[in-house]
Image (cartoon, rainbow, N blue to C red; front, side, top):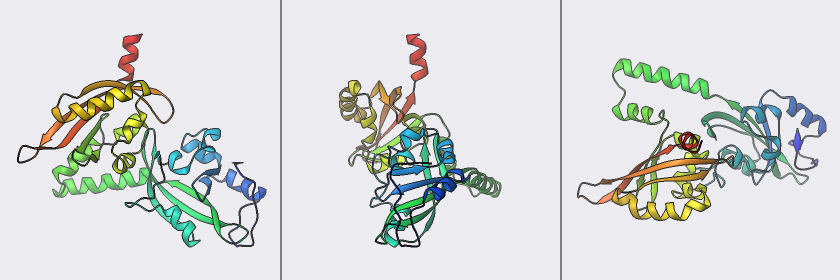
Length: 280
């Protein structure tokens, strides 16, 4: 297990592991990370690197929320308190089930965080065990949906959401007046490589990943044309792995009861392969 810091011992029962302890964590079959209080990845074992498809050199340069959540900033906000933060504040272990994000979509992870004390007994690091329970939860949800379909209690809205979350298009709806994203489908994470939560927190965060040569044109076009129904653009983005992708983006205004436009919906499609075919 590689570490970005030298272990230091404290007198607390929750001490930072020595080299023998690090060796044990490296060989542990579960995904294990050691994090600083500011969420920097200090160490990560082989199981975690493999499961989350993270190069070790890259992982040790990143923050946990970036490497796992694919967020640009910590997930602590008025809508959500990170369980890891609770572990640091209380000095007690915390177990929570969370949604983590990879370039291919969402993973449901059971996370156990154990705070580690410094020489003064203050938690300054944490060892985090991660267990992927995505398949179990998906199977359970499918069983519940199947039973509800049999009983006739499933709603049309639930069926629609199930459909939207399983098409290879990023479908989105925005509150235009407040510039707040109301809905974004799961395909956004597969295309952009960043979490949907990042858009719910900051509606314009998608534009930060637009290629610098295209960004001004796209931001101006979206601001002006989306509400008119004439926004139809092709542009490049740089995903979380630094790869360039081509996006075909369209928007459609949705009038309210009095005819005023307060929502805008859109479709973002990854057309990288077709652009390669044209250039080839």
